[in-house]
Image (cartoon, rainbow, N blue to C red; front, side):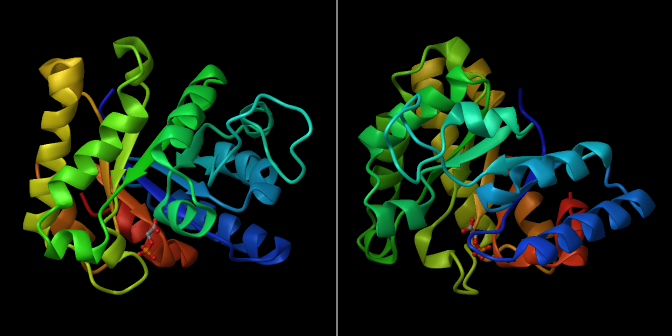
Length: 252
Ligand code: PGA
């Protein structure tokens, strides 16, 4: 179902105490001023998921993992399974973030397995796609993003796909302070919806939540979220400050 979502991707930041403080700060601000009709979630490092789920669920928000294994269980030292993520109370998992693609060599074929595995354990995958700068400059961005969407999501049945959230994150905008313009975001989100509609039908594509990510902050969120095909944001740097994060969630 199409929803407004603002998700914080903490990446590899915060020790335990700092994580706890940030969670309680978010909870405190939300108690005073809860933006309506928007699902808010944080994706802390996996080691804090249980803590995050407890605090989040008591305070009207949610949490998710930043990654998980494509395997069910077994001898995969250092990995975290979908079942483990789900057992903490987390409801979401980011899959295919560009940092996973770039630094850990994750390919669409692997991400397709991860999406299936997340759904098997009733987690909502937030599937990330986005082109690098050279691809945009070569005007290949639609082709690249279209392929990423097809390769990792088109094996799903319509029923399975219903739960998937897509995040468009142009790699050149992540952590760079350089945001896609509202027009660039809208254009790509509309394109992704079209690609999805060719496979799953217009009605289902219309019901898909598509988030924007890449230097989205409290100052620019409103004009990004004002676009008809932008349903919210996946927020990195600005999600590490409770006030900014909640302000972004209130930017619809
Ligand atoms: P950023 O990161 O907001 O710091 O650009 C977004 C993301 O990587 O999800």
